Length: 291
Image 1 (cartoon, one colour):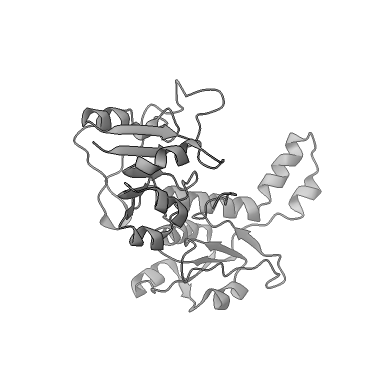
Image 2 (cartoon, one colour):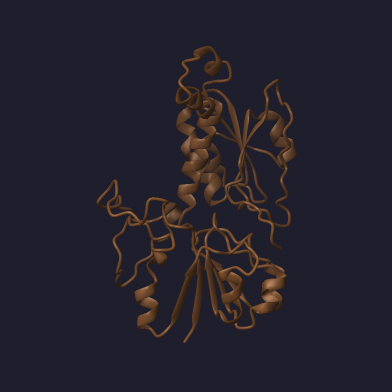
C-alpha cells in the first residue's frame, strides 16, 4: 500500500459547485504537434467538474482506494506544523499544483524518508528542489502539456488587458465613474506592436501562434531555435539573448520556469519611449515564508 499526499487549493468560498456553465467539454483529438491525449480505460468523474480543489481530490480517491492505497488531501501547506508537514514523513507520493504548490525543499526531503515520487498536477517543477530529489533518489514528474494551452491563452489575455489598460478601466467603472479620458490615456491597440517571448517551448510557441492574427511583430529568444519553416509561417524574428530582444519590444512575456540558465532577464525600465510592462511569468508560483 502506498500513501499519496495530495495538496490542493481550497473549495470555492460558497461551497463545492453543484452546477456548471457547461454540460461538457469541447472535443479535442490531440495536442498540437501530434502528442496524444490521455486515454484512460475508464473515469469515475464528469469531465468539466471541478477536480482541482480539496473536495474534487483530482478524481483520485475511488481509484486509489480500490487499489488498496491511502489518499490524504489537504490545502494546509504553508503554516508551521501544517497538515502537509505532519503527513509528509511517511508519504510515498506527493502531488501538488503549479499555482498551489507544495514546496519540496531539501529540508523536507530529509524528513520524507518514504518519498519516491513527486508529481505536479500540471506543468512545472520549480517548486521542487531538484538537486535534493536526485540525492534522495526521488522521481519528479509532471503532466506534460496538460495545461500548456490554458497558460498560453492566459498570457494572451494578460497582454491584451495590459496594453488596453483594461483592469484599471474596469475598476473605474466598478467605482461608479465614467472617466473616459483617464481610461484611454494609457490604452493602446496591440496591432503593429512588437511582442517578444523569452522561451518558445510548448507555451511560448502557443502564445506566438495565438498572437499572429492580431497583426503584431513577433520576436523570440530560446536556447533552441525554432525550425525555419515555423519562423517563416509566423513571421518570427529570432534573438540570441533576452537582452538583445527586449529593446525591440513593446511587450515581453517570460514563458520559462525559474531554473539554471533561465534567470529573470527583464527589468522594469523604459524601452523605445514606452513604459515597459512585464506580463507575469506564468510558471512562477507565489513565494511563501517557509523554507
